[in-house]
Length: 202
Figure 1: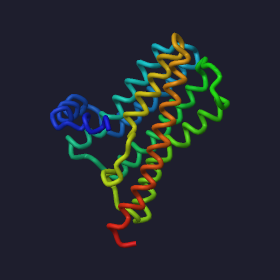
Figure 2: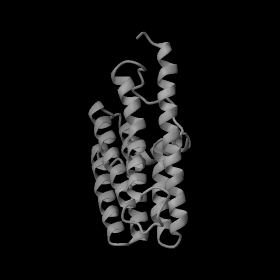
Figure 3: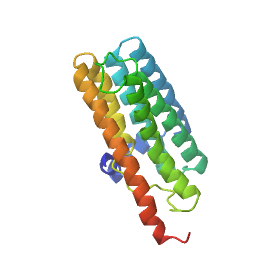
């Protein structure tokens, strides 16, 4: 839902003009390396640095698309690369949660985080697979609307990293909220595929 507020024409033009000195694919690749360093910062217990770097990585993920659209250089390969890097970034962010000093949840933490990883990665796969198989043609990901796009859960993951040291119980609640949001998004996406598929020949 936050994504709808970010996709503002004036902001998009400003970001595109400001960051056009590098190619969209370069910004995409840079976002991965920034997040990789952020992950290492979590491992060595530098939550403030990790939070700052995760935030920069998230901003760079927005920049690549804005630059591509402004320059008229958006390509299918670029979209593929952006989506692929997004999945690596999602993995690194969730993997970083394993290194936080959190209270023991109701279920074992490793199972909780595995479920979070699975349900975080599944919605874009559902949309892409529905599009690939022709059940719901949705190359721009606008037909199958979702509760959570990347912005929502990335903000929650960053919040968990930031809160873990001073407020570990609050960080755990943020992780619970993230999982609940992503489970709801998966269910919503599957239901919408079945509903929207009625509008297309099968």
